Structures are given as C-alpha cells and as structure tokens.
Length: 122
Ligand SMILES: [Zn+2]
Image (cartoon, rainbow, N blue to C red; front, side, top):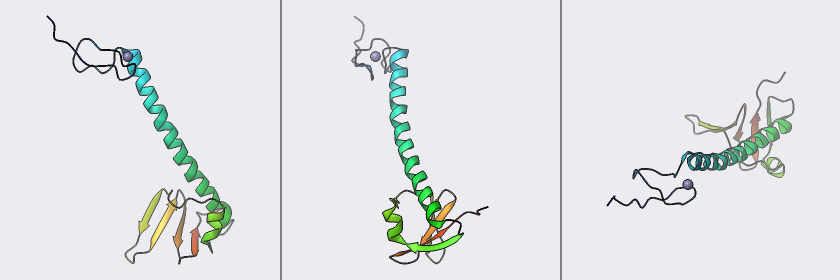
C-alpha cells in the first residue's frame, strides 16, 4: 500500500496526490494562487502610493512658489494631509527631525507651526 498524502491544494483545497512537499494540484492552481496574492499586495501598495502622492500635492500647493515657508499645521490637516505617510525621516545631532515626502520636506517648528522646504522650483 502506498503512503497516503494528507496535503490539500492551497487554492482549490482538493486533495493532492504525489510528493509530500506539493502545495498545489497543478500549475494552474499555483499560478492562480500567486496572482491572487500579488493582486492584494498591489492594491495595498497602490493605496499607500496614492496617500504619498496626495501628501506631496498638498505640500506643493501649500508652498506655492516659495522654497521655504512656515504655515499653520491645521492648514495641512484641513487639506487632508496624513502625517503618518512619508518617504523618509531624518534627525540631526540636535534632535531636529525632517520628514520627507519625495522631494518635499517639512519640520515641526512647534505644536502648531510647520516649515515646508520645497525642491528647487523653476
Ligand atoms: Zn488546486
């Protein structure tokens, strides 16, 4: 009698026969499973990118043509800026933190003021 295999396909949940390390019943199930996983990840990444792009747009619109400007934090909040989404964070030896959103950056001056640093504008 051959050893029984209690593995089930990770996609369709059908019983798998053959090697004990098989995870899918065939190539179609394996491909469909990975496409499904990638699709969910792509949606997640796309949503994060959209939030970052929106934050960058808000920084760009708020700063206008100024390379440096200080504004009230509530202005960014009212425009829907999401402070938890950034591309980079840098703190200097004095503990001053600069937050980046692609080519724009900003610093918290105090509880209510923010200084936006724009990239070179032509
Ligand atoms: Zn299957």
